[in-house]
Image (cartoon, rainbow, N blue to C red; front, side, top):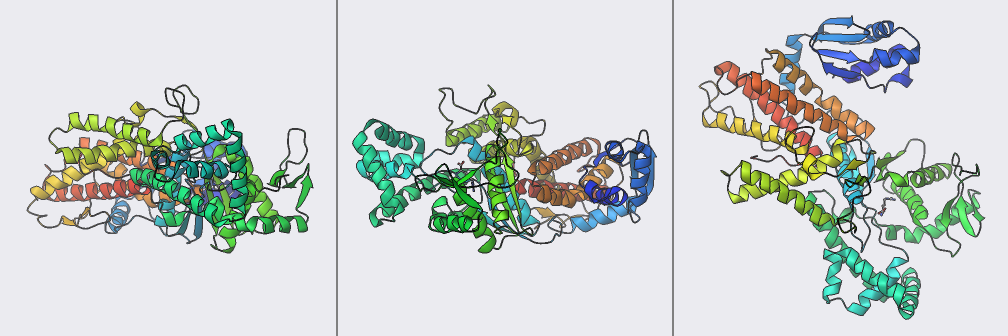
Length: 585
Ligand code: ARG
């Protein structure tokens, strides 16, 4: 509500280039909200901070929202809202089932998860999966058409040895079953044969040739390998509650047939040339340490195509066939130079018109407590499934001791939602491009910016609303009915905003739509986590200070309606993060 208006005012006062300044908007003891934007801007526009603040205020369109707008201290802008305006807007929102704002709908192709066949998914893949899945949910809620693209690694030279190994052990052997349960063990076994047995290695190399020339039997075995890996991926996706399905798979192999032509086109148009035997492009703006243009290899000296060529093909496909207006690559940060070079090459080739935005959503590493990439105690890569199971087990221990009144079934359900939710929230709540340390104790804590804290606030409101239904006031008997976005009760009563804590809570609720839009524009789910965390905190203060069930009839109904709206936003927001809201906690 307020943030976009302040940004528009900043753009008008100082120019469009300043629109994306983040105005820090906080509740304050002197006013409803305090905007802290002028001080940072003042330096850039060379004005005394209070003058910068005055320019913002002059341009600020508040159409009757505020009763007072004041500049205070070194350049804060204090806003005091009109109570009637708050109430009207809040009640309009309360009567709508969904809080999503309207935006100009786009077709967005989102490349995320993208694990590799016959390999273990690692915590890096976990994070691209979790962040990508939240972004697609947010973009869909904003009205965009999202096309999920799971670019699995299902092609290339390792498949020679993997296929040979598979043929040797036989499809029905327990070793073949490893592909589904412990893919890295399968991979290691194939690798060991390849390194230790020259005959095997020769057969594996021939097998690569036969795969590339689409030899029928080889392709069939390859397909079986891929299918087994899909079972493994899907087990992880199901455990995580991720929205990816088989139909979203568009793996490396699906682009293979186009690569030769793609290289030829680039070569003919003078965008690629042979350097040290390899065909390369030299996209503008990329130089090595020596100042020489940096090559992007699109055909190796042995004639093989690599990762870059396939990724060029993904852009062409997503623009020409999928008609995407926006393409997102939710991929590990270390691949940034690769992706930027691919994107620049595609621009130069005219495959990526200026009207289509292509963005690398960089995913930071997940570290162990030693500050290095997360490994298990024995030093091997951590098994993702075991990690998720441990999160659920730890949550179960907490629920078992805190809620012995629940049935074993209910406790199991809550533990699953809390354990998985905690892992996902930890991935989402820090900037997606920053590294963070994987720490069960911190992510499962019931205080701080954690999944369990936000889930707990929602579960608490559910229980309040349930209790209210059991003993409705004379006024409200029958108004709490099933319905709403997630089968939640809808509150029919009008919300009156009276107490200061109610006011702060109300104003924060009004920021929901603008927050979502911002998350979709900037592709930053951590902003949604921050919003929900603050909402949960504001709710807690409200509930500490304002009795709900014990209040008199009309106050009780108003506060229940406010609780219900908070619950809707919390569970809808969590859902957009891909996190469930427990019924009991
Ligand atoms: N399979 C790759 C990996 O595990 C990630 C692929 C990301 N997507 C892409 N279009 N390059 O590192």
